[in-house]
Length: 299
Length: 274
Image 1 (cartoon, rainbow over the protein chains, first blue to last red):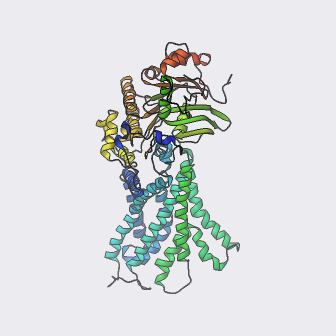
Image 2: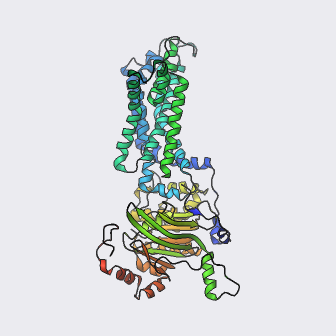
Image 3: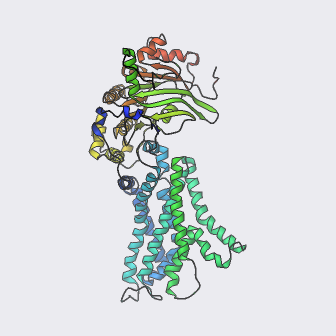
């Protein structure tokens, strides 16, 4: 991207620098921030302000509200809702990230727009980050919006109502629910990066859904299974298990929610995950995926 | 006029003050070179699609790439546009420094659905620091300003191509490369596009286009390059090429070069080279 053809370093360059009519509209290379803004605006126009995105967001809202209602209901409080939502979110979040991300790079490659973009002074990493930021905005709305809206009925109907907001252990506090939202969004952003990397790696429509879908399943559930198998055959020791969970984004997310939004209410008990290792694991998955996507774009 | 890839006209040579008029012409051509491709070869696996093609693009000139289907035109164009590295040979951009050096129109231009023509062009314009208004002025040059509010996915193939041509001009690149800009356009619009490209060239831009509309090429191109089986068969002005081939028109040149294979498409690696 942006590298185009070899630019001569020889003195020949000077010969063509004389002022001609072409110089009437001299343009300047925009800043990286301006490039990102352009891509985000494009993603908003083409991927967020669409009927299918609205339908996706409404579906997520229906699912989280439905799960809460079928479970203990809004009045059961924050911690109960967190526990009831944790398992469905482990499936729902990757699916939504997949829906938003799998076509992000692939559609431009298939349409030939990636080729056109290569003739602009835009680096591959700028394309990847720009597309990612735009889709991330959509993902935050699609996942975060319904979860934030769900906060309203819980806050107004949960009993007993809290006289004050607090984060000390043992209390059913909205902070625990807010932690779930933050951790879910973090997990969603990581899964979006993975989906975009897979989208950049596949090259044809035929392999797209299959490749991206299989890739996500392998990364999500394959790694979880591998960790379970490693533990059961003794490859992963008891002491290393908590940190090893960080290798799988799904396990890292689950561990973070258990540790920071559920176990914390009990005050004591066995450690379920290493928050630091899990955060590092998610950061590596997210950052690494964007690096892979950039590499795939340069191929 | 050159035949078979030995085209360079005095490049790299330094003339003395006692040069002839012909030498002056050669030097001017060499000075105005903005893109130079030397001995370009390209293979897809074992199939060699380009077999050592050399070409220079000069500012202010329209160069037309012609040849039968499968001759290697698109492969050559994509290499010149920097979209893939050739298997062998060298491509050097030696034009003025600009954020966007080469404008490119793909053979089948497409835009992300869900945006208007204006939004699509404004996006590209923003990548070179231009405003939406300047994007619209590019749209105006192809006569499609009235369609600025139309969804790109609601455009006809021809209109999409025109928007693609407007996109290729964004950022005032010194070189504009267009893969079949007239394809899918009615004759009047096709003529309009070629004329607008001539106007762009008159402003100093080097234009390279591929086309099967040989009458239009003969009428508007400064230089014609004919590829056949991955080789540069003819290279010169339309008049020179026609004279060299002892033909009456570019169409005749094309027909005569394809006489033995009329009605067939040469498939590289399958069709017998002999």
